[in-house]
Length: 204
Length: 60
Image (cartoon, rainbow over all chains, first blue to last red):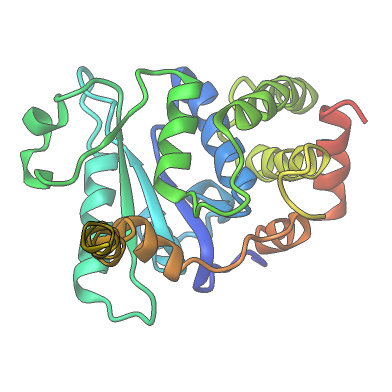
């Protein structure tokens, strides 16, 4: 459907909860990744063609060099999607030969919780965002910044505020109550990239 | 003079002992150049209609 993922050094796969309570953090992830000149990718952008969700997720994971996994959705009802997809990412990292290494970034809301909820990933320290946009921005910049021409947390935060406004407008114009749709995801990334150019964080 | 030589040797030793942060260096060594807005939009197959809607949403 035109967006078939090919291996891209700058693509970052987002494995996060698609629920209303996570919207502001999802927008913060998009703002951070675009501000770094990287490409946010997620399963939302591939049209369903009857092959199911899982092949689409694997296909996308294979196309990205980095993946971000937010494991903060614990409690009732239990959500197994994020840990499951982290397992897929881990298998890719472990068994797939690639010219450049694949790596993943873990996020959590609460410090020290991951060691109880998913002790298998002991040794991989998650970024703790405390459910706040600035926390997410800081975690992503910390993990993906290169030290050259990187934006500051405050610059990305300013972009996030504008992008939140754009997200509200996009939802209104499409008559949707969440941003988790293929169309809105693409438009949100388009808005983030345009705002990034205006803030002189990325090139046109 | 001997004391000065000793101090210099100590400084030189420190300079040689310095190693950059290996994690960050490793990260930098395999990072491709940042993508432009056009490259980001092309990768996601963002069409004219999407771009138009995005610009409208940001108040253009």
